[in-house]
Each structure stands twice: as C-alpha cells, then as structure tokens.
Length: 187
Ligand SMILES: [Zn+2]
Ligand SMILES: [Zn+2]
Image (tube, rainbow, N blue to C red; front, top):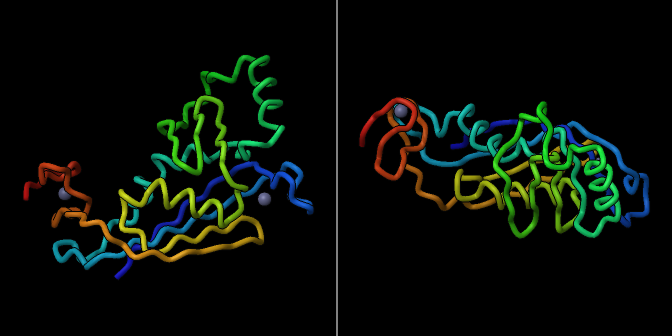
C-alpha cells in the first residue's frame, strides 16, 4: 500500500538556451507529490505517517522554496551572485531563516545562505523529479514522484528497496539502535 504526501514549493527558474517563453526568468508554485510504498505497519495501520514524509522531504527541499534555480552554465548565475554580493546578501541575511542543510548531489547543489540551487540539467518538471529522488531515495521508500509546475506535469515510478523499521506506536522510522526518535519505543 502507499502513503502519499504533497508539498508546495515556490521558486524562480528559466530554461537556459530553450527556444520558448521559458528562456526568460519566471516563477511557479510547484506541487510535489511523493508516494511511499511499504507493507501496512499493523501497530498504527498505516504505511508511513504523511506528516513524517513531509517533514523528511521538507528538511532538504525547503532549499528550493523561495529560491532561484539556475543551470550551472547559465550566465545569469554570476550576474545574480554579483548583485547579491554587492548588496551584502550573498552569504546570508538575518531574515533568511528558512534554510535546510546545504547539499550537493550529482544533479544539484544548494546554497541556502542566498536561496540558490545550481543544477546540472535544466530544471523542468522531469529534472526536478530526478533531483528529488536523488535527495530522498535512501530516506524514504519512494514508489512514485509527481511534480506539477504551471501547466507542466511529470511523474516517475520506482521500486522501493529500503528496509525501514517503523515504530508500532507512532509509525515513524526507528533509529539505528531500534529506538523511536518520536515516542521512545524500543524494539
Ligand atoms: Zn517554468
Ligand atoms: Zn514511536
């Protein structure tokens, strides 16, 4: 069975080199849906708590929210960084508090201090799905990711392979010692 969580991400991007309107900088409210598949955890009668899927995903994905997402070879990148530098906000600002840990994968590097994500490929709906899967595949048993960005929607399905021990009392993943980080249950 599957537990399904949805997150909203607001971001600006463009398709550098694309022959269409999307080559100009513009923004979206993107809707990301993550489907987690596993057996039903009998203690709580659910696969995985949806608020927990959201929490685990948001920890890293908040770096995409109110962020600028540019491809690594986009000449806007040095131009934007120059402005941020001159304005003194490149390395952070006191009111820029909604930040996840910086990350770097094969496909994307996050710079939370200036709300920038640099991608290897153009950040289409398909590109976003590849990035999200790379970031979350070891943390969640992802069966499907769907991303809606404006009128563009893409989805991909996966075969979940992780063995995630879940708490029979509250449903969250047990830590490496078999202890529930939320309610303290011990296996
Ligand atoms: Zn767009
Ligand atoms: Zn628990």
